[in-house]
Amino acid sequence: MPIYLYQNPKTGKVKEIIQSVHDTHEYSEDGIKWDRIFTAPELNTHDKLNAESTARQFSELTGKQKGTMGDLWDRSKELSDKRKKLYSGGDPVKKKYYEDWSKKRKGKVHPKARSE
Image (cartoon, rainbow, N blue to C red; front, side):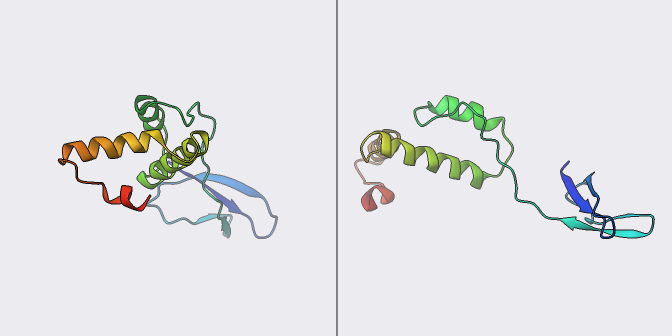
């Protein structure tokens, strides 16, 4: 369950409270309603995933992390951008994906491959 931060409006003391995402996010103590502190979500960047990781390594590492599908797509895009820089403007993983996609569809060009 997530941890939420609350601050006492009189003393300024901050407490970490564990609550379900379905709970009403309120906290009071001794009749005083504490103010909720909103923070930016944290991202684990202490991984061993790099631009040249294989699909299997990517799946294994990201499968252990928490986050949304959008977070996964963002991470994949970051790695693709790194590969573009590493290989002089071209991402070999994306290129192979487009080639395989095209072969399965009798030579049809992937719609995103046209714009790149």
